[in-house]
Length: 499
Image (cartoon, rainbow, N blue to C red; front, side, top):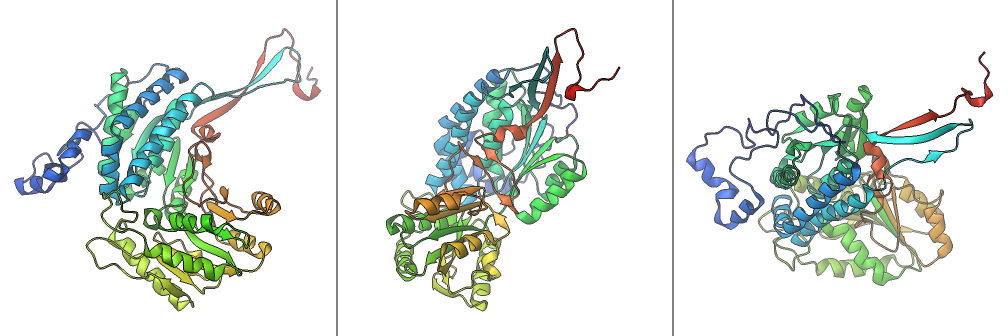
Protein backbone atom coordinates (compact mmCIF):
# COMPACT_ATOMS: atom_id res chain seq x y z
CA UNK A 1 0.00 0.00 0.00
CA UNK A 2 1.05 3.60 -0.32
CA UNK A 3 0.98 5.53 2.92
CA UNK A 4 2.05 9.16 2.80
CA UNK A 5 3.33 10.37 6.21
CA UNK A 6 1.30 13.11 7.84
CA UNK A 7 3.93 15.57 9.00
CA UNK A 8 7.08 15.10 6.96
CA UNK A 9 8.62 18.49 6.16
CA UNK A 10 9.30 18.74 2.43
CA UNK A 11 11.28 21.70 1.11
CA UNK A 12 9.60 21.70 -2.29
CA UNK A 13 6.11 22.84 -1.40
CA UNK A 14 3.33 24.80 -2.97
CA UNK A 15 3.70 27.23 -0.14
CA UNK A 16 7.38 27.80 -0.94
CA UNK A 17 8.89 28.13 -4.40
CA UNK A 18 11.94 26.32 -5.66
CA UNK A 19 13.63 29.43 -6.92
CA UNK A 20 13.28 31.38 -3.68
CA UNK A 21 11.46 34.68 -3.08
CA UNK A 22 8.39 35.43 -5.18
CA UNK A 23 9.54 38.87 -6.30
CA UNK A 24 12.72 38.92 -8.38
CA UNK A 25 14.35 41.88 -10.12
CA UNK A 26 13.69 41.99 -13.86
CA UNK A 27 17.41 41.70 -14.57
CA UNK A 28 17.58 38.49 -12.55
CA UNK A 29 14.55 36.98 -14.28
CA UNK A 30 16.02 37.69 -17.72
CA UNK A 31 19.12 35.65 -16.89
CA UNK A 32 17.17 32.49 -16.09
CA UNK A 33 17.60 29.75 -18.68
CA UNK A 34 13.84 29.48 -19.06
CA UNK A 35 13.73 33.04 -20.45
CA UNK A 36 16.51 32.55 -23.01
CA UNK A 37 15.37 31.75 -26.54
CA UNK A 38 17.77 28.86 -27.09
CA UNK A 39 16.37 27.10 -24.01
CA UNK A 40 12.68 27.69 -24.68
CA UNK A 41 12.26 23.90 -24.94
CA UNK A 42 12.58 23.70 -21.15
CA UNK A 43 8.97 24.86 -20.96
CA UNK A 44 7.94 21.62 -22.66
CA UNK A 45 9.03 19.86 -19.46
CA UNK A 46 6.72 22.06 -17.40
CA UNK A 47 9.60 24.12 -16.01
CA UNK A 48 8.80 27.70 -15.08
CA UNK A 49 10.58 30.65 -13.48
CA UNK A 50 9.21 29.46 -10.15
CA UNK A 51 8.17 25.82 -9.80
CA UNK A 52 5.49 24.68 -7.41
CA UNK A 53 6.10 21.54 -5.41
CA UNK A 54 3.94 18.45 -5.21
CA UNK A 55 3.02 18.86 -1.54
CA UNK A 56 -0.24 20.77 -1.15
CA UNK A 57 -0.31 21.21 2.63
CA UNK A 58 -2.17 18.02 3.53
CA UNK A 59 -1.11 14.40 3.47
CA UNK A 60 -3.35 11.78 1.87
CA UNK A 61 -2.98 8.36 0.32
CA UNK A 62 -4.45 6.33 3.17
CA UNK A 63 -6.04 3.65 0.98
CA UNK A 64 -4.51 0.29 0.15
CA UNK A 65 -3.26 -0.05 -3.42
CA UNK A 66 -2.45 -3.63 -4.52
CA UNK A 67 1.00 -4.24 -5.96
CA UNK A 68 -0.23 -4.91 -9.53
CA UNK A 69 -2.12 -1.59 -9.43
CA UNK A 70 1.04 0.12 -8.26
CA UNK A 71 2.77 -1.53 -11.19
CA UNK A 72 0.20 -0.03 -13.55
CA UNK A 73 1.00 3.46 -12.24
CA UNK A 74 4.72 2.80 -12.72
CA UNK A 75 3.98 1.62 -16.27
CA UNK A 76 2.31 4.97 -16.96
CA UNK A 77 5.32 6.79 -15.50
CA UNK A 78 7.54 4.88 -17.93
CA UNK A 79 5.28 5.85 -20.83
CA UNK A 80 5.32 9.51 -19.75
CA UNK A 81 9.12 9.44 -19.66
CA UNK A 82 9.17 7.84 -23.13
CA UNK A 83 7.16 10.73 -24.50
CA UNK A 84 9.74 13.22 -23.17
CA UNK A 85 12.86 11.09 -23.62
CA UNK A 86 14.63 13.31 -26.15
CA UNK A 87 13.94 16.56 -24.38
CA UNK A 88 14.85 15.10 -20.99
CA UNK A 89 18.04 13.78 -22.55
CA UNK A 90 18.76 17.31 -23.76
CA UNK A 91 18.39 18.60 -20.22
CA UNK A 92 20.66 15.89 -18.77
CA UNK A 93 23.30 16.82 -21.34
CA UNK A 94 22.88 20.54 -20.65
CA UNK A 95 23.01 20.37 -16.88
CA UNK A 96 25.38 17.45 -16.24
CA UNK A 97 27.60 17.82 -19.32
CA UNK A 98 27.52 14.26 -20.66
CA UNK A 99 27.13 13.72 -24.40
CA UNK A 100 23.58 13.72 -25.75
CA UNK A 101 23.41 10.02 -26.59
CA UNK A 102 24.33 9.22 -22.98
CA UNK A 103 21.78 11.72 -21.68
CA UNK A 104 19.01 10.09 -23.71
CA UNK A 105 20.31 6.65 -22.73
CA UNK A 106 20.06 7.57 -19.08
CA UNK A 107 16.36 8.41 -19.42
CA UNK A 108 15.92 5.16 -21.36
CA UNK A 109 17.40 3.34 -18.38
CA UNK A 110 14.68 4.78 -16.12
CA UNK A 111 12.08 3.67 -18.70
CA UNK A 112 13.59 0.18 -18.76
CA UNK A 113 13.47 -0.06 -14.97
CA UNK A 114 9.80 0.96 -15.06
CA UNK A 115 9.11 -1.85 -17.54
CA UNK A 116 10.99 -4.27 -15.31
CA UNK A 117 9.16 -3.09 -12.19
CA UNK A 118 5.75 -3.61 -13.82
CA UNK A 119 6.41 -7.33 -14.17
CA UNK A 120 8.00 -7.46 -10.73
CA UNK A 121 4.84 -6.02 -9.18
CA UNK A 122 3.10 -9.37 -9.82
CA UNK A 123 6.00 -11.45 -8.52
CA UNK A 124 7.20 -9.97 -5.22
CA UNK A 125 6.51 -12.14 -2.23
CA UNK A 126 7.90 -14.79 0.06
CA UNK A 127 7.76 -18.57 0.11
CA UNK A 128 5.43 -20.94 1.91
CA UNK A 129 7.77 -23.02 4.07
CA UNK A 130 7.19 -26.52 5.46
CA UNK A 131 6.35 -26.46 9.16
CA UNK A 132 7.55 -29.17 11.51
CA UNK A 133 4.25 -28.89 13.40
CA UNK A 134 1.08 -30.58 12.14
CA UNK A 135 -1.72 -28.19 11.27
CA UNK A 136 0.61 -25.22 10.96
CA UNK A 137 1.59 -23.03 8.00
CA UNK A 138 4.85 -21.10 7.85
CA UNK A 139 5.02 -18.19 5.40
CA UNK A 140 7.11 -15.12 4.66
CA UNK A 141 5.19 -11.86 4.35
CA UNK A 142 6.82 -8.84 2.69
CA UNK A 143 5.51 -5.33 3.41
CA UNK A 144 6.67 -1.82 2.43
CA UNK A 145 9.28 -0.18 4.66
CA UNK A 146 7.33 3.11 4.44
CA UNK A 147 9.29 6.19 3.40
CA UNK A 148 12.35 5.75 1.17
CA UNK A 149 14.76 8.68 1.06
CA UNK A 150 16.78 8.82 -2.16
CA UNK A 151 19.92 10.96 -2.44
CA UNK A 152 21.43 10.91 -5.92
CA UNK A 153 24.66 12.21 -7.46
CA UNK A 154 25.33 14.56 -10.36
CA UNK A 155 26.73 11.97 -12.76
CA UNK A 156 23.50 9.99 -13.23
CA UNK A 157 20.80 12.49 -12.21
CA UNK A 158 17.91 10.49 -13.74
CA UNK A 159 18.86 6.81 -13.91
CA UNK A 160 19.88 6.27 -10.28
CA UNK A 161 16.66 7.85 -9.06
CA UNK A 162 14.80 5.60 -11.47
CA UNK A 163 16.46 2.45 -10.13
CA UNK A 164 15.27 3.35 -6.64
CA UNK A 165 11.95 5.03 -7.38
CA UNK A 166 10.36 2.46 -9.69
CA UNK A 167 11.24 -0.49 -7.45
CA UNK A 168 10.33 1.36 -4.23
CA UNK A 169 6.95 2.32 -5.68
CA UNK A 170 5.87 -1.17 -6.73
CA UNK A 171 6.91 -2.31 -3.24
CA UNK A 172 4.37 0.18 -1.85
CA UNK A 173 6.65 2.90 -0.50
CA UNK A 174 6.57 6.66 -0.79
CA UNK A 175 9.75 8.47 -1.86
CA UNK A 176 11.54 11.66 -0.89
CA UNK A 177 14.24 12.59 -3.41
CA UNK A 178 17.18 14.92 -2.95
CA UNK A 179 19.05 15.29 -6.21
CA UNK A 180 22.48 16.85 -6.61
CA UNK A 181 22.45 20.66 -6.17
CA UNK A 182 24.13 21.05 -9.57
CA UNK A 183 21.42 19.10 -11.43
CA UNK A 184 18.29 20.51 -9.80
CA UNK A 185 16.44 21.31 -13.05
CA UNK A 186 16.49 17.63 -13.98
CA UNK A 187 15.12 16.69 -10.55
CA UNK A 188 12.27 19.20 -10.87
CA UNK A 189 11.40 18.13 -14.42
CA UNK A 190 11.28 14.42 -13.56
CA UNK A 191 9.23 15.06 -10.42
CA UNK A 192 6.68 17.06 -12.42
CA UNK A 193 6.25 14.16 -14.85
CA UNK A 194 5.76 11.64 -12.04
CA UNK A 195 3.39 13.89 -10.08
CA UNK A 196 1.12 14.34 -13.09
CA UNK A 197 0.83 10.58 -13.58
CA UNK A 198 0.02 10.09 -9.90
CA UNK A 199 -2.59 12.84 -9.88
CA UNK A 200 -4.13 11.52 -13.12
CA UNK A 201 -4.65 8.28 -11.18
CA UNK A 202 -6.28 10.21 -8.32
CA UNK A 203 -3.26 9.65 -6.10
CA UNK A 204 -1.31 12.38 -4.27
CA UNK A 205 1.65 13.75 -6.20
CA UNK A 206 3.46 13.81 -2.86
CA UNK A 207 3.89 10.03 -3.05
CA UNK A 208 7.08 11.03 -4.90
CA UNK A 209 8.27 14.24 -3.26
CA UNK A 210 11.36 16.30 -4.01
CA UNK A 211 13.57 18.48 -1.86
CA UNK A 212 16.36 20.66 -3.25
CA UNK A 213 19.42 21.67 -1.30
CA UNK A 214 22.87 20.76 -0.13
CA UNK A 215 24.52 18.69 2.57
CA UNK A 216 22.28 20.07 5.31
CA UNK A 217 19.25 18.47 3.66
CA UNK A 218 21.06 15.15 3.30
CA UNK A 219 22.05 15.25 6.96
CA UNK A 220 18.45 15.94 7.99
CA UNK A 221 17.25 12.96 5.93
CA UNK A 222 19.91 10.69 7.42
CA UNK A 223 18.99 11.65 10.98
CA UNK A 224 15.20 11.66 10.60
CA UNK A 225 13.62 8.51 12.04
CA UNK A 226 10.67 8.89 9.67
CA UNK A 227 12.96 7.97 6.77
CA UNK A 228 12.77 4.19 7.00
CA UNK A 229 15.33 3.50 4.27
CA UNK A 230 17.90 5.96 2.96
CA UNK A 231 19.47 5.21 -0.41
CA UNK A 232 22.63 7.25 -0.91
CA UNK A 233 24.76 7.46 -4.05
CA UNK A 234 28.00 9.40 -3.80
CA UNK A 235 31.53 9.32 -2.48
CA UNK A 236 32.82 6.79 0.03
CA UNK A 237 33.79 9.62 2.37
CA UNK A 238 30.28 11.06 2.55
CA UNK A 239 28.69 7.61 2.44
CA UNK A 240 30.54 6.64 5.61
CA UNK A 241 29.06 9.67 7.40
CA UNK A 242 25.58 8.85 6.09
CA UNK A 243 25.87 5.23 7.22
CA UNK A 244 26.90 6.27 10.73
CA UNK A 245 24.03 8.75 11.08
CA UNK A 246 21.45 6.25 9.84
CA UNK A 247 22.85 3.39 11.93
CA UNK A 248 22.87 5.59 15.03
CA UNK A 249 19.07 5.57 14.88
CA UNK A 250 18.98 1.91 13.73
CA UNK A 251 17.62 2.88 10.34
CA UNK A 252 18.35 1.19 7.05
CA UNK A 253 20.80 2.51 4.49
CA UNK A 254 21.49 1.46 0.91
CA UNK A 255 24.90 2.70 -0.18
CA UNK A 256 26.24 3.04 -3.74
CA UNK A 257 29.68 4.58 -3.30
CA UNK A 258 33.00 4.81 -5.10
CA UNK A 259 34.78 2.42 -7.42
CA UNK A 260 38.41 1.92 -8.45
CA UNK A 261 37.69 -0.44 -11.28
CA UNK A 262 40.17 -2.57 -13.19
CA UNK A 263 40.36 -4.23 -16.59
CA UNK A 264 42.76 -7.15 -16.97
CA UNK A 265 43.92 -8.30 -20.42
CA UNK A 266 45.74 -11.63 -20.62
CA UNK A 267 48.12 -12.77 -23.34
CA UNK A 268 45.29 -14.60 -25.16
CA UNK A 269 42.93 -11.59 -25.12
CA UNK A 270 41.21 -10.49 -28.31
CA UNK A 271 42.70 -7.02 -28.73
CA UNK A 272 39.89 -6.02 -31.10
CA UNK A 273 37.66 -6.25 -28.02
CA UNK A 274 40.14 -4.92 -25.48
CA UNK A 275 40.91 -1.54 -27.05
CA UNK A 276 37.33 -0.30 -27.67
CA UNK A 277 36.26 -1.67 -24.28
CA UNK A 278 39.00 0.22 -22.48
CA UNK A 279 38.23 3.35 -24.50
CA UNK A 280 34.55 3.31 -23.53
CA UNK A 281 35.18 2.36 -19.90
CA UNK A 282 37.95 4.92 -19.31
CA UNK A 283 36.75 7.84 -21.44
CA UNK A 284 32.95 7.49 -21.49
CA UNK A 285 31.14 10.22 -19.52
CA UNK A 286 34.58 11.90 -19.31
CA UNK A 287 35.61 9.39 -16.65
CA UNK A 288 32.80 10.39 -14.30
CA UNK A 289 31.04 7.05 -13.86
CA UNK A 290 31.37 5.06 -10.66
CA UNK A 291 32.15 2.11 -12.98
CA UNK A 292 34.80 3.99 -15.00
CA UNK A 293 37.94 1.91 -15.62
CA UNK A 294 40.77 3.59 -13.71
CA UNK A 295 43.32 0.75 -13.73
CA UNK A 296 44.39 -1.36 -16.71
CA UNK A 297 46.50 -4.47 -16.14
CA UNK A 298 48.18 -5.81 -19.29
CA UNK A 299 50.14 -9.01 -19.57
CA UNK A 300 53.77 -8.12 -20.20
CA UNK A 301 53.66 -9.79 -23.62
CA UNK A 302 50.97 -7.43 -24.95
CA UNK A 303 51.60 -4.30 -22.87
CA UNK A 304 53.43 -2.18 -25.43
CA UNK A 305 51.14 -3.08 -28.31
CA UNK A 306 47.97 -2.28 -26.37
CA UNK A 307 49.36 1.03 -25.08
CA UNK A 308 50.25 2.06 -28.63
CA UNK A 309 46.79 1.11 -29.88
CA UNK A 310 45.19 3.06 -27.05
CA UNK A 311 47.22 6.17 -27.84
CA UNK A 312 46.00 6.02 -31.44
CA UNK A 313 42.41 5.48 -30.31
CA UNK A 314 42.60 8.35 -27.82
CA UNK A 315 43.89 10.65 -30.56
CA UNK A 316 40.74 9.97 -32.60
CA UNK A 317 38.25 10.80 -29.82
CA UNK A 318 35.83 13.45 -31.06
CA UNK A 319 35.74 16.23 -28.46
CA UNK A 320 33.21 19.05 -28.43
CA UNK A 321 29.77 20.31 -27.49
CA UNK A 322 27.89 17.45 -25.80
CA UNK A 323 24.82 18.30 -27.89
CA UNK A 324 26.62 17.57 -31.18
CA UNK A 325 25.60 14.11 -32.35
CA UNK A 326 29.09 13.06 -33.48
CA UNK A 327 30.86 14.07 -30.24
CA UNK A 328 32.05 11.27 -27.92
CA UNK A 329 33.70 13.30 -25.19
CA UNK A 330 32.45 16.35 -23.33
CA UNK A 331 33.53 18.46 -20.35
CA UNK A 332 33.95 17.62 -16.70
CA UNK A 333 31.04 18.68 -14.52
CA UNK A 334 32.75 21.44 -12.48
CA UNK A 335 35.89 23.54 -12.18
CA UNK A 336 36.66 21.62 -8.98
CA UNK A 337 36.79 18.40 -11.01
CA UNK A 338 39.36 20.02 -13.32
CA UNK A 339 41.52 20.92 -10.33
CA UNK A 340 41.29 17.36 -9.01
CA UNK A 341 42.32 16.05 -12.44
CA UNK A 342 45.42 18.25 -12.53
CA UNK A 343 46.38 17.32 -8.97
CA UNK A 344 46.08 13.61 -9.74
CA UNK A 345 48.26 13.91 -12.84
CA UNK A 346 50.95 15.69 -10.82
CA UNK A 347 50.77 13.10 -8.05
CA UNK A 348 51.15 10.32 -10.61
CA UNK A 349 54.30 11.95 -11.97
CA UNK A 350 55.74 12.35 -8.47
CA UNK A 351 55.21 8.64 -7.83
CA UNK A 352 57.16 7.67 -10.94
CA UNK A 353 54.42 7.58 -13.56
CA UNK A 354 54.86 8.70 -17.16
CA UNK A 355 52.04 10.49 -18.96
CA UNK A 356 52.01 8.86 -22.40
CA UNK A 357 48.85 10.63 -23.54
CA UNK A 358 47.00 13.74 -22.38
CA UNK A 359 47.50 15.16 -18.92
CA UNK A 360 46.54 18.78 -19.60
CA UNK A 361 43.55 21.12 -19.62
CA UNK A 362 42.26 21.74 -23.14
CA UNK A 363 42.50 25.23 -24.57
CA UNK A 364 38.79 25.75 -25.14
CA UNK A 365 35.83 27.20 -23.20
CA UNK A 366 34.43 24.90 -20.55
CA UNK A 367 35.76 22.26 -18.17
CA UNK A 368 37.56 20.22 -20.82
CA UNK A 369 40.60 18.10 -19.94
CA UNK A 370 42.56 15.70 -22.09
CA UNK A 371 41.75 12.02 -21.57
CA UNK A 372 44.93 10.72 -20.00
CA UNK A 373 47.00 7.53 -19.95
CA UNK A 374 49.73 7.01 -17.35
CA UNK A 375 52.25 4.14 -17.36
CA UNK A 376 55.17 3.13 -15.17
CA UNK A 377 53.54 3.28 -11.74
CA UNK A 378 53.80 0.52 -9.17
CA UNK A 379 50.57 -1.44 -8.80
CA UNK A 380 50.26 -0.23 -5.20
CA UNK A 381 51.06 3.44 -5.88
CA UNK A 382 49.00 5.72 -3.66
CA UNK A 383 47.47 7.63 -6.58
CA UNK A 384 46.42 4.39 -8.28
CA UNK A 385 44.53 3.44 -5.12
CA UNK A 386 42.73 6.80 -5.07
CA UNK A 387 39.50 7.26 -7.01
CA UNK A 388 39.74 10.45 -9.07
CA UNK A 389 36.51 11.30 -10.88
CA UNK A 390 38.26 12.17 -14.14
CA UNK A 391 39.44 10.41 -17.32
CA UNK A 392 42.81 9.14 -16.05
CA UNK A 393 43.83 5.57 -16.81
CA UNK A 394 46.76 3.97 -14.98
CA UNK A 395 48.36 1.12 -16.95
CA UNK A 396 50.40 -1.69 -15.37
CA UNK A 397 52.31 -4.79 -16.51
CA UNK A 398 51.73 -8.18 -14.90
CA UNK A 399 53.29 -11.63 -15.23
CA UNK A 400 50.72 -14.16 -14.07
CA UNK A 401 47.12 -14.73 -13.05
CA UNK A 402 47.71 -15.05 -9.33
CA UNK A 403 49.41 -11.69 -8.92
CA UNK A 404 47.00 -9.75 -11.11
CA UNK A 405 43.91 -11.15 -9.38
CA UNK A 406 45.48 -10.00 -6.10
CA UNK A 407 46.21 -6.55 -7.57
CA UNK A 408 42.61 -6.23 -8.72
CA UNK A 409 41.40 -6.88 -5.17
CA UNK A 410 43.96 -4.82 -3.23
CA UNK A 411 42.07 -1.51 -3.49
CA UNK A 412 39.50 -0.57 -0.86
CA UNK A 413 36.58 -0.36 -3.28
CA UNK A 414 34.91 -3.35 -4.89
CA UNK A 415 32.49 -2.20 -7.57
CA UNK A 416 33.31 -3.41 -11.10
CA UNK A 417 36.01 -5.48 -12.77
CA UNK A 418 36.61 -7.25 -16.06
CA UNK A 419 39.04 -9.69 -17.64
CA UNK A 420 39.75 -10.38 -21.29
CA UNK A 421 40.72 -13.96 -22.03
CA UNK A 422 39.69 -17.08 -23.97
CA UNK A 423 40.72 -19.49 -21.20
CA UNK A 424 37.56 -21.08 -19.73
CA UNK A 425 39.34 -22.28 -16.61
CA UNK A 426 40.63 -18.78 -15.94
CA UNK A 427 37.16 -17.32 -16.52
CA UNK A 428 35.59 -19.51 -13.85
CA UNK A 429 38.45 -18.93 -11.43
CA UNK A 430 37.81 -15.19 -11.96
CA UNK A 431 34.13 -15.63 -11.16
CA UNK A 432 34.82 -17.85 -8.14
CA UNK A 433 35.85 -17.26 -4.52
CA UNK A 434 39.52 -16.71 -5.39
CA UNK A 435 38.77 -14.33 -8.25
CA UNK A 436 37.37 -10.80 -8.27
CA UNK A 437 35.91 -9.50 -5.01
CA UNK A 438 33.70 -6.96 -6.79
CA UNK A 439 29.93 -6.76 -7.05
CA UNK A 440 30.16 -6.62 -10.85
CA UNK A 441 32.47 -9.22 -12.39
CA UNK A 442 32.70 -9.18 -16.19
CA UNK A 443 34.40 -11.18 -18.92
CA UNK A 444 35.34 -9.72 -22.32
CA UNK A 445 33.26 -6.55 -21.84
CA UNK A 446 33.97 -3.12 -20.26
CA UNK A 447 33.54 -2.32 -16.57
CA UNK A 448 30.81 0.21 -17.47
CA UNK A 449 27.40 -0.32 -19.02
CA UNK A 450 25.54 -2.64 -16.63
CA UNK A 451 22.09 -3.89 -17.60
CA UNK A 452 19.09 -3.15 -15.38
CA UNK A 453 18.08 -6.81 -14.95
CA UNK A 454 20.99 -7.56 -12.63
CA UNK A 455 21.56 -6.17 -9.16
CA UNK A 456 23.88 -3.14 -9.33
CA UNK A 457 26.33 -2.44 -6.53
CA UNK A 458 29.64 -3.36 -4.96
CA UNK A 459 31.50 -4.61 -1.93
CA UNK A 460 33.91 -3.18 0.66
CA UNK A 461 34.13 0.63 0.52
CA UNK A 462 31.62 0.68 -2.34
CA UNK A 463 29.01 0.18 0.37
CA UNK A 464 27.42 -3.22 -0.19
CA UNK A 465 24.09 -1.90 -1.46
CA UNK A 466 22.24 -3.34 -4.44
CA UNK A 467 19.80 -1.51 -6.71
CA UNK A 468 17.77 -2.19 -9.85
CA UNK A 469 17.29 -5.86 -10.79
CA UNK A 470 17.51 -9.40 -9.40
CA UNK A 471 16.27 -9.44 -5.79
CA UNK A 472 17.28 -5.84 -5.01
CA UNK A 473 13.56 -5.18 -4.35
CA UNK A 474 13.95 -6.87 -0.96
CA UNK A 475 15.87 -3.88 0.36
CA UNK A 476 12.76 -1.73 -0.06
CA UNK A 477 10.56 -4.04 2.02
CA UNK A 478 10.47 -5.52 5.50
CA UNK A 479 10.12 -9.26 5.99
CA UNK A 480 7.96 -11.02 8.56
CA UNK A 481 8.03 -14.76 9.26
CA UNK A 482 4.45 -15.77 10.00
CA UNK A 483 3.30 -19.01 11.64
CA UNK A 484 -0.40 -19.82 11.43
CA UNK A 485 -1.99 -22.55 13.55
CA UNK A 486 -5.11 -23.85 11.82
CA UNK A 487 -5.43 -26.93 14.02
CA UNK A 488 -7.03 -27.47 17.43
CA UNK A 489 -3.74 -28.47 19.06
CA UNK A 490 -0.79 -26.44 20.30
CA UNK A 491 2.44 -28.32 19.57
CA UNK A 492 5.63 -26.36 20.27
CA UNK A 493 8.65 -26.19 18.00
CA UNK A 494 11.65 -28.40 18.69
CA UNK A 495 9.32 -30.85 20.43
CA UNK A 496 9.28 -28.84 23.66
CA UNK A 497 6.71 -29.90 26.27
CA UNK A 498 5.54 -27.07 28.55
CA UNK A 499 2.85 -28.62 30.72
